[in-house]
Image 1 (cartoon, rainbow, N blue to C red):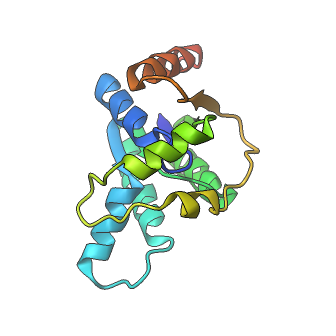
Image 2: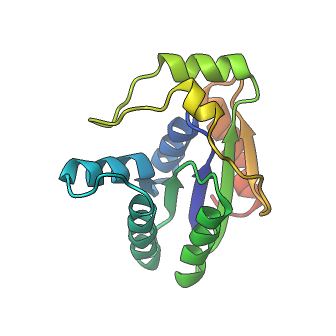
Length: 169
C-alpha cells in the first residue's frame, strides 16, 4: 500500500512518517531529501516538479515489488495529491492519505523557529514562508492527526489505530 503524508512544514509530519516506516518496515521517501539531492547536482536552478516526479517513480517501483511505501511531502495542492493517487492506481495498490496538522499556532511556530535541518544543505522555510504558503483544502478522504501537545509516539500509536481500521497495518 501507499501511505502519503501531507501537511505544512513543522507540523511533525517527518517525525511521524519516519517512526511509522520504522515500525511497519516500509520504504520511506522524503521529498526534501530528493529535492536537495537534485539541487546538490547543480544542474537545476530551481526545483519545481522534479522532486515529486522522481518520488512518484521510485514509489511505483517499490510498490510493484510488493512493498509498503510511505511518502513524506507537503502535498499542499490537489494536483500533487491526485498524482499520488495515480501512482497507487498504476501499481494496483491501495492509497491512504494522512494529513498532519498542528492546531496550536504558537506551538507550530516554536517548532519551526527552533528546528534544524537534518538534510545536508537544505534551507528550512521560515515561519512567514509557511504562513504565506498556498495549501489547498482537501477533497479526498484522509486520516487527520493533530500533533499539538502530543509526543511523536502517541501520534504514531493513534495513526496505527486508524490504519488498523482500514485493515492497513
